Length: 293
Image (cartoon, rainbow, N blue to C red; front, side):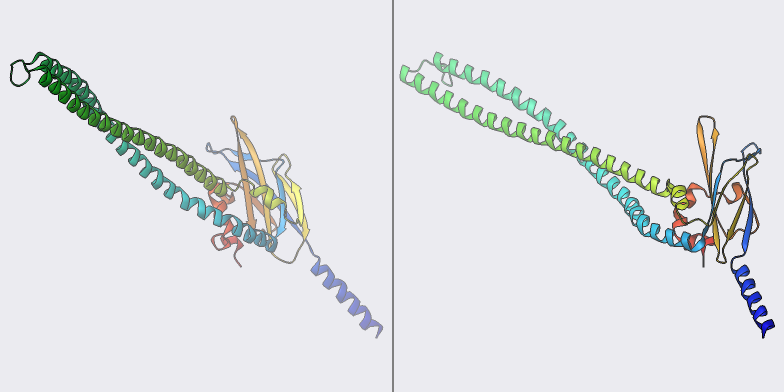
């Protein structure tokens, strides 16, 4: 019986050791430049997280980002079409306004000429030579003068009304052209904002910070040779997350790695680097093979 207890105790200890078996992961981080030079990256933070935690987080992020991305993607062509229509309408109205401006100047000139013509008719009536060429009686002369003036006033009043109506139309056209062009500028800015939103969402600039905020099984930082050792206990699948950067001229190149199911040794390089274009597909687990069930 005592031997049985000893065997049972040993079995429990063994099970506990298996369950809490420590895993070791040796990592080296480097990038290859366009010139073919291998650059080892030091001071790169590395984290090991549970695959289930990463997938759960990506699922939440997917619900948050993809509808916004879809909205941004859909809004740009609509805004582009809208401002193109506004621009076409403004150009058409501006052409109409330019054409009407010539008619307006012609009408103003005609009115000025008609004013002189009325004055001539009045003088002719006063001189008694209008139509008959003979000198009428003072009463007839006064009647002719009055008739000419009344007809002239009527014609001038009509011309003034036509000019005023045309000027009002011109003012309305100018106002509408300005309104359409203001709307166009607003829509262009909105489209630009939509593009920027789309761009920022696709780049997912907070990716590193987001992933490093997940519960960690192990963390380490690479040494000057780009090496790090991580030790952790976990039976389930894990994901390794690393983020580094390097000064290239006046700019900083940033690197992110998200690798599922690393073995005991792992090289992080250009081959498994997460490109910026890959960040949105990463939100959709189905599109990221290493995170599939």
